[in-house]
Image (cartoon, rainbow, N blue to C red; front, side):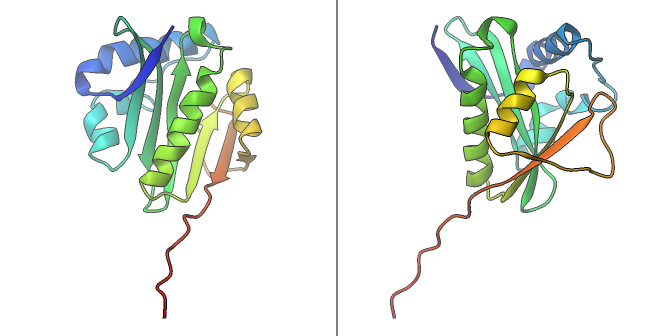
Length: 164
């Protein structure tokens, strides 16, 4: 199967909620539409207009099979959010593709550090983050369904020096 990545819009809200809430339920985690997941009520405001991104992995028939988002926390710091894949595409390298895409986008958007919160029950995701070099840390606050937090410092872009 071939998949493409595209920016999410508010018209995708119900499909993205279905994806996210469905994956959470598979792992016994609760959706939080009034809190942690309230960013899905207005995707364009929460992600794109804020200077971040929410991108979707879409199959040939237009079906959304994955998502990954970046929410700015400061000019140099963003949070990786809503990285989910439907069961059928997990275990085939698509998580790696989504994460590589998100880290490239974070760098393009000018961020130097990416943080994320996750639940240890999401073993495949935790393993992927750790393989990519994310390091655990203890934030001041974690979302109710999360018990781990990670950060990754992105490689600095080489600046072009001016010849003298």
